Length: 102
Image 1 (cartoon, rainbow, N blue to C red):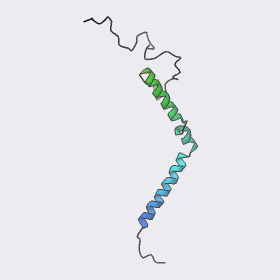
Image 2: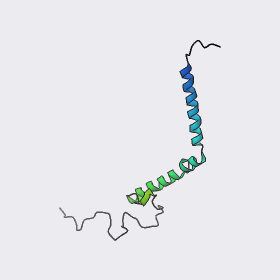
Image 3: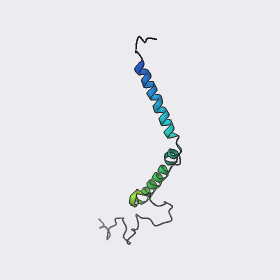
Image 4: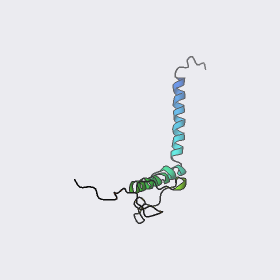
């Protein structure tokens, strides 16, 4: 059989390449380990939600070494922004005396 024209060959090659990419992507997305990390209740989003909640409440990211997630934000511990760990100084700025009245 003699092929008289190669017209359409590149289109067929791109369609095959696209099919292979879709198969690989599907295999990765359905992988159990990938789902446990990034899935609906995956570790990545649990840690991210915990960090965002802590940052929203306390005004800082928690300062944990090694980029570990902050402690649970259960509202039973001390408020880190209000009271520092090492002393009694607050992070809030307040005047030392009353403002002058006009």
